Length: 96
Length: 516
Image (cartoon, rainbow over all chains, first blue to last red; front, top):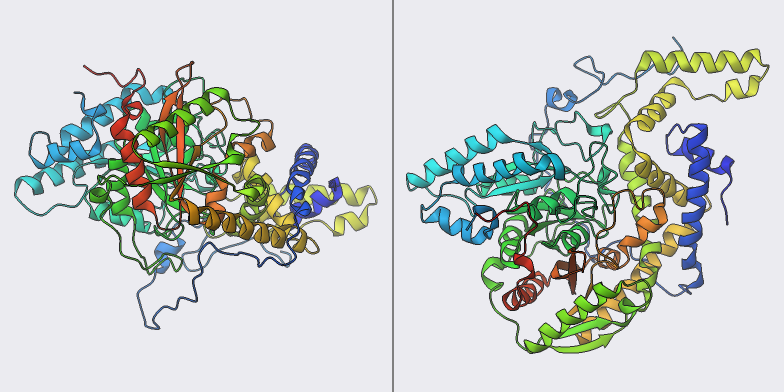
């Protein structure tokens, strides 16, 4: 199955990526090629196979429920592109 | 003999006996970096001052008879995806160009506790996605054996710096072959441990169910020494396994009696370069001469490994990399320009009477995410995020992700059956020797197929080791790969050491590692 440019554009919104028109063209072609390759899996009968989500059969690992020091606010905000020292700042969503 | 050519284990003995100091040793490697890294470009940053200060401190403690760590005074290079507190960790990406992590990765903390001298951060494919290190946002690393060729990837800098005599020990990560493949192409020894053997805490995540940190070095003994420091349970990584860490650096020296070595029928098919095949078959003869019995086995679903991997890894990547939103850390687009561009788009659509399209434009927050990510990520990372997002989007989950998880199980079952009959599996690391820089950059699928012999180990979660077993007529290293059942790292290292006792491929050096 080949992908359409419209599908790829929709995926770019889901992926939160802004692609230029040229990038969309190239991505459509390349993704089509890769998707066609990975679809070779369809030829395998996997009806009775249990999916393997993880390499190890580990059961739930629980951490002890106790207070521990965590990153302080200054360190947590140190790499923020835009903050007021207390919060992360983002562009207004509901208009100016 | 030049310090640059010595094994890490020998250097450690010289340090312990006081014949050399860590400052002298660190200087020697820093000097080699200064002389040759402008052409090899293995390092993104070299921590000259701090490395020497640390070496001096270790020398002092040693002189005073105080206790020192397992690697005391040995220089170690770090792939730039392991978080180092307060020091830039870029992951080869513009997205993290100025990122200074607030904590150390567990393996970094372990190396510091072992008194290793961290000399710098090595180049890599952006977010470890690639097989040639050409996807780094900053520079292209060259293969020290031929500067017109790729070093492999994604741990290309990590392998190249060992081959070029710029570090005796190096730490990389392997998601689909990213330690073993560059080790093979650069003629060094590299081990991908069993999933869960080494803590991933502080490793910048790519595909969390496949990623594993591991050592690269000149010899199996050196690799064992470094693994001994890296391995172990970590409460901060709930997927790390609570099992004792063997004394790899000791057990590595014990030869394996009655080794049963498996060869995979499917590995010797179409696409395998003739010189690589010959070198691998010769290596198998070395094992036979050492008393191993050879048995052919089948990994029937191995040919589906790359397809399975290129569903699972992008799916996990698209989810992991969703964290780069331009808000918490990492690159953020110029907000004023972004708002102005958005307003101009709206106006142009409205004046053309395209009201519905104007209303469907991104809101400023969504546009900020999209624009920041578009600027911060390179082409390959975008491709994988897109593939993963597509494969996980509504209606496709069963056909792609779920299907891939089922084939993953089949791949693992093949291995389990093979390891009922043999102790280790031997074969090539790659189909060819190192290719030319630029040769595959425009063809993502051909780049993906470079992982043919390595991805299955990651999908199955098992360990593997690569080390040199010959050279091509053009003088390029050829690697042998051994794979073992889960937690058979000791066996992998022992088998590699046996081979290195009988051969000297691992002691060949490219011209730049001079021997005065």
